[in-house]
Length: 299
Image (cartoon, rainbow, N blue to C red; front, side, top):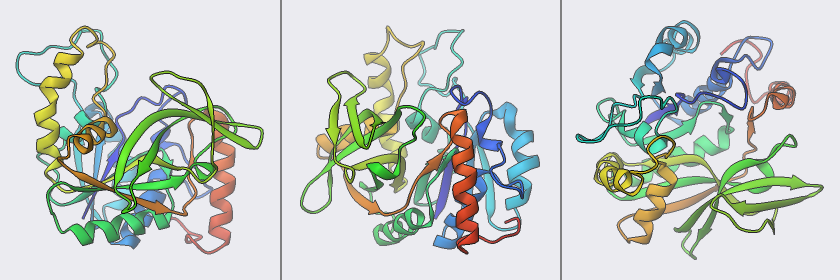
């Protein structure tokens, strides 16, 4: 099974390349914890999706450390990976979104795969759940999964975050994913769709997506099929639009073309959405090491 780590983002809110920011005294990054957990769960290959200009710094930091533990490959998210006949504005710098990110890996992905964000700590149970699902589908087309977290386990006290609020049927098949803004208000959780609407109170145990999707390889063909329609729908907004995998999956589900299991986990997210989050991440990981969930030395 492949682990695809999406690491081409600019980290604008954090203020730099947060993917390579040490989070413990041994110099490990959040990526190191993710790879450790993924390998333990049974993943045997990791693909770093990065900007080409960051290849050297990734190789010299994360890459060379993990190369002896798990097979490593690299892919690049480039704005020019776009259907013929379309051109993005010359001043666009921001990547085109997570669906395009996966498409940029079409020649590198070899197996069923899991995608994760580089700057999110997901916890071992989340990788265990993902690995069990991928083993169960054995490459079957149109059978996807989303590792779903309890909302209370995914928030920061330092501001709002983007999460996909999930709805599912009695068989745990996703019926809707609404990209939303969530935040703490005292001891309560409030959220509203990114497309607009009133802030409403959410149950602490509402299930949300952390962009941790399990896919068979056919998702790449489906992304390609939807690329031109996406660009046509956004032809007046090519400077800022994003081709996002949650939106792709949601649309495919509503068309009845695929299914996506909601795979709940008790794992607790940690991440550096805002620079003020780092101390909390460092302290939490220190406690996990003390509890024996991670080795005391460098991975």
